[in-house]
Length: 49
Length: 238
Length: 246
Image (tube, rainbow over all chains, first blue to last red; front, side):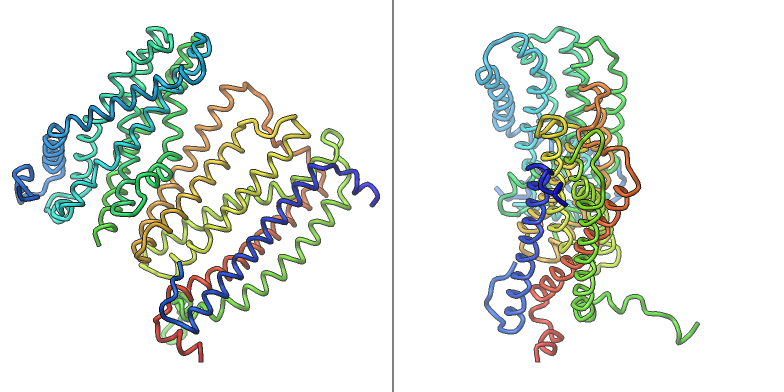
């Protein structure tokens, strides 16, 4: 397990960027779903794309 | 002057494909002849942008020789993108596109005629001008020939692929840049084989494969693009 | 046969699919998390150091699944676009609309991880090799789809236009890939692709497989949540929506 630290910056950057992008996608999708729920419940006049 | 003027002759009610194509070709060529200035501007755009590259990278002859084919091809792509709105926008704006879609001729045939006229007025001049511009980059005679021939075979394909994009974005806001985003990835193979053919001449290698590919892509898009464009036009008109 | 035939089209309406999508998304999300943990454990802990590439090769455990998903999602997207045109089905078009951003995200991941793999292994962040260049063009195809979607106001026209675009793109992708491959071998000779995986020990293959399944589950989960959002957005006025809201 000590070898984990020796994987080098590139490996960690790659996994880090991947995690960031996926988390960002999940957050964005959930925000979109919440907004859409509000449109559904509240209704008229909201401009949703 | 009424929008639907004498340029749009009443089509004969018989509806054959070749007749339709010829009708659309003649009509659009006549219309193009009326906007010679606009077409001249397009050609001038090509000339000016090609001239910008040496100004940007310096006059080193060997660098220019290496860059030349790519520059001439990419700028031709850019100019084709600029020319695309001409294909449908005018007809769409004054309602003639709807009339064309309603005519008894098959819509893909009419569109093929329009694309042919569009190529003759925008793409063909590029191909004709390219050898003269290629001289600026120090290309040899053999390279210039292959450049012109490649553009002659490639620019129709660009018009065909571009027609699909133009029809998809009819009347859409921001359509100018959007069309380029949609069409340019599809044009990558044409660029690769067209510019590659000139490089092949420079490296004294056969250009058979390049021209085979350019020919195959031209044939495939000549068949497929009018169909896809017709579908896109109907979607836009609904 | 009469009376016992399955109505496959039952879930083809946004109304009925909506309630199915929620629990499905949760299930796939959990599966994705578990598979990802397993895959990461295999890739980062169990798999040995590679003889040629050292530790940097471990990037394949995210690069390869991301690249496969980016291509797979495009094919699935094009499939649903075709279905939407053939059956004039709204839900099929909405599914394609929901898939596009996921595909784009995986394409970006594939490009970034490929670039970060190239630097320690081959010394350069970007080398215009065939696969990476094709991934880049695939990204442009995704962006084009999403941009066209965004630019057209009428949702049904956007459905049909994007469907035509996706199908034209799908037909062109093999041509584009082959021409880029040709271009690459011409200009670089028989050089190795920038992102060649090391010769695969079974354990490395297993790791990649598990991570691919994780990525696949993840994309299904996210796409379903996005699809529910799209259904809400587009079916605002529909009577069934108000019924659910009660």
